Length: 381
Image 1 (cartoon, rainbow, N blue to C red):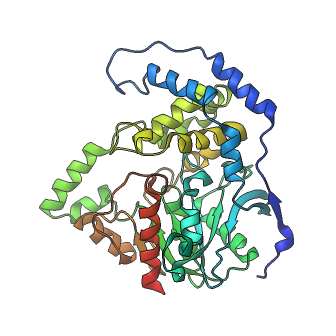
Image 2 (image 1 turned 180 degrees about the horizontal axis):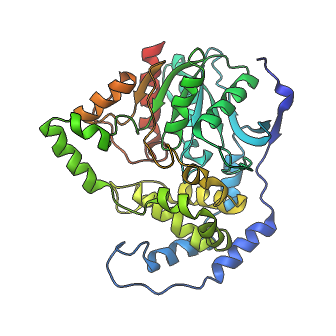
Image 3 (image 1 turned 90 degrees about the horizontal axis):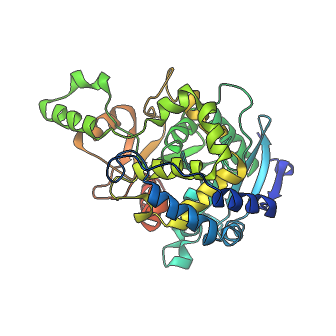
């Protein structure tokens, strides 16, 4: 394959003012539900909290300022497998920087990495060894933000990985690193499986070494105690089941009501932030609302649900599978049980102790996230 930059087109975010006015009008005319009995988040996102957040979105959140900030990143589109793919491409000022492709999660977007891109691309500007620089590529997964959604069944992390290989080829990157969490933790290993000669290493936020029912017979008594505790932690709205069964049904409401979309996304972000009472106690409110706004303006509540309705495993949910073709590192580390299972299916070369943070660590702790990525790839240089 050869580089084909002619297929790459510059892109800028330009949400029509009519769309912004329509959002504000819909927020102002919200028909609110009654608060159900219970305390806190017992029945879901509390009405009073959602009212305050929706009013902030309508009257104080400045989309135009966020749009301008996003447009500071060089953005492009290219067609791959018949779909228009949107991506950020930030070349480092260091010519020998390592190319790195970052894949975002669900219910996220390329906004997940906006606080880390500068740190990765220009470490010299932040007082860090310039040898640790990266050329950063952040695509929008098909069906998310400005990337066209699948038109037929069958989109999978493996297919996304194959599309990313085409993208990196068009950008002229023969060898590169792969990073991701959540949905990205499925895509990044698939890149290594598809092209182990091109992928330097795979860095994951988590999702590696997670035990399943199939592992129970091999567990020691202490590991079984840990497994039993894990089952108590697996709580919340199972979006895999919900969006596997009826994504179109729910997407009608999320597409018609910005408050409905806000409630759904903030509920999930709060579930993904177990170390805090609310998502915005760990992640900046504007960062969260920028992501919600992108889902609204791009009408992607439905198209972004393909990982659930297509299934991330054989007919349903499964944890990301490992690969023993290139080295793997993880931000989250984990217990001795998780390390044992991770090493069964991966070549683990980076398993830190003490890293903290919630599910979307790039949004919450960007400096720590970048430091861990640097540490992993430093081992491979």
